[in-house]
Length: 172
Image (cartoon, rainbow, N blue to C red):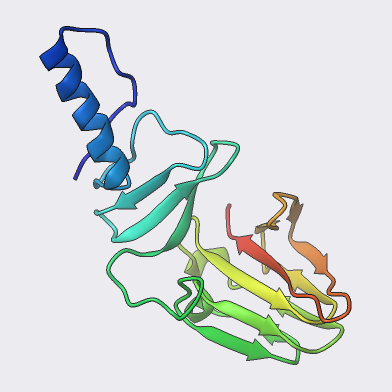
């Protein structure tokens, strides 16, 4: 476990080298530790050894996003905990958190699991092959891959079978 403030202080050679080695150790271990690294930086990775989850700081440097388990087997791509294909209106549950949801039918509505059943920073990633609506079940903030947010609802489109994905981060 290694964390560092990423500030290399001036000092004599041996002191500077110890500080530099500490910073490099934090970088190669993804700032691993049971507590959040301080300070935090935009897009920084953090291996949260307290929860066993890989976190990443968002580009605005305002919250930690959950990127999956640290010591779990990964799916062939993306590191999802599972893949679910849907072609009808679906109410997703807590078991869908961390999954890739493939939406294959036009005009469906996919409802996110309630916040009460979702840990902070939990996410569901959607791959849509047809226009669909992603709907919250309460006070969810839905954020797409372009960092555009919408309270409780977002419409996604796919044109000419081009894959369009959105990652819905559940936040109160």
